Image (tube, rainbow, N blue to C red; front, side, top):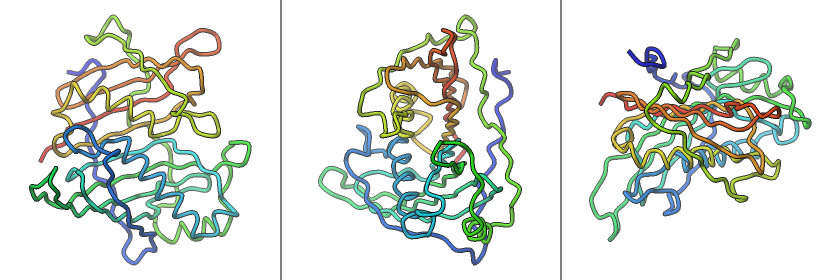
Length: 275
């Protein structure tokens, strides 16, 4: 029995509705995206998703009517890992929605190439992702989608009553009950965006630092889930609380609250999936 509770069943992400509209774009894996084993890192996948979302919005009327979105959760299912060198295709569509938020699915498919540094052929890569996006106004408050945006997105899916349900345990365990000690993760000025929030990819850079000690979780099929609970702003001190279970690493990203209490800013799970 886990001290956190039973490990939840991993449910596959839903496929695209037959005939539904989707956005498609082509991209490249760069050397800055990979670890020392040439595996594409989770933070690189997060950056891909941001780029694809921006490119998608730019070719729709959303850039004028619904330009502001924040991510509440990202699920990354690495089915066949990406490595460098490769080109990949991104397909993006709406998998479910309500009047203020959506689940946006992105499928990444890579065709691996060879070079003198990575001369062995590799099978095509496949990463399935889903992100819970909240539409906000220019003050950052949740806002209803415009009629045009709702009509376009709702045509891609039959699920129009999307509700939030956490996938990670949001309460951090007491440090005296777990084996791994807390670890500080030093934030850099380059980790923050123009809105003075920690960039989504920067959270997963901290997780990649953890995965160095847990390579078995990411050598094959795996799922990463990150849920953003509170913004992390410049000058924040970030502490990671970690629990390693049989096939799962859980991380709570902690910051100091306004009253000196410790608050959970984000939760992350990385789970090895069966082959």
